[in-house]
Length: 298
Ligand code: GUN
Image (cartoon, rainbow, N blue to C red):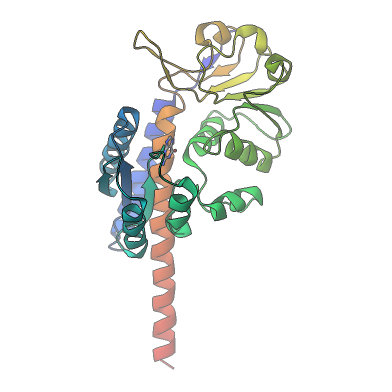
């Protein structure tokens, strides 16, 4: 069996075209979606991610506002900026690029962001929403994986899903989203003994461990769907995922490449969440106007 390669660039382009149409609809209500992006320090990977997010915003017509802080900034200065952004009507999404410098409290920063503008979905309230199946903003990377599965028409209900990696950004929300869609989900992590005895059970295997070549063909069931969320830079400069792509491709039914699989979807779902936020705010503004008009005419 040779797997079908899931083309994240193509699916991403199609969702971005929908995003553009949504932005055009909002323009008719005089609303331009706005995303504030905060970068603290100059981590090279984070700098590239932020640049890509800002470029993608421009592509679909989202206005972006970038805030750069040096790595030795006092946390209070960032908190103050977030509090100002929470109040701004032209900002619908706020994102603080992670990781943060060590002297920052991650929870303090994330919980300062207004729940209604938390387009990363990292605020405790949003995490809770995900747990009870009432998501406010689905975290972008697992949301991107769900969209890839949907676009390929891969059913989730009743299937065995193994998620490798238990991070707050990918593994845990991924498991919750797939449980919500009635999959049978198991999360493995760095301390899992004999990973292969779990991965071999997967109808759908999602790997987000950050270790090149962690998943080899012997660990994959023939016909499984393999989603590789890993992004690893090898010493020779090559970018690879967590899965032995060439080997596993010969066993799986579907596989995502790295690069060009899940990666482009993360930024695309950030755009989508930002537009959703602007749509919600425009709708609640319209509702309050109608209420005002109704009360003045009586
Ligand atoms: N760093 C790595 N992934 C992410 C993400 O999805 N959002 C933010 N804000 N930072 C990240």
